[in-house]
Picture 1: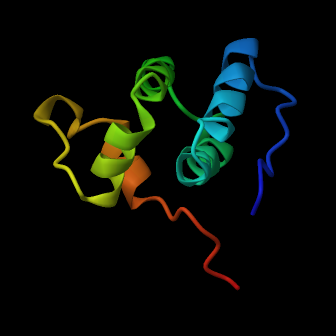
Picture 2 (picture 1 turned 120 degrees about the horizontal axis):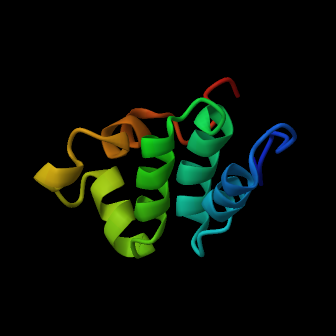
Amino acid sequence: MTGTTRSSQGLSDRRKRLLFRCWHRGTREMDLILGRFADAHIADLSEAEVDELERLGEMPDPDLFAMLSGAAAIPPELAHGLLPRIKAFPAADTDA
């Protein structure tokens, strides 16, 4: 997979921007992790979850990737939000 498979049609401007940012992080690994999660869930996230995804998007890629890959612990303040859901979400197609 090389990019979004979801159309941004029907999304608010804020969610369109967030979907784009999730697919254009700076490192390909984070593009695939956050981009695929956003493709699947961007339309269904609550406003609070959109806020949280935007905050996660502001984190440096190495720090966020370390938490998502298990190389670093998820801080308690992030342990009950979107981060565990993103970590559990498959980052690659498994049907191949």
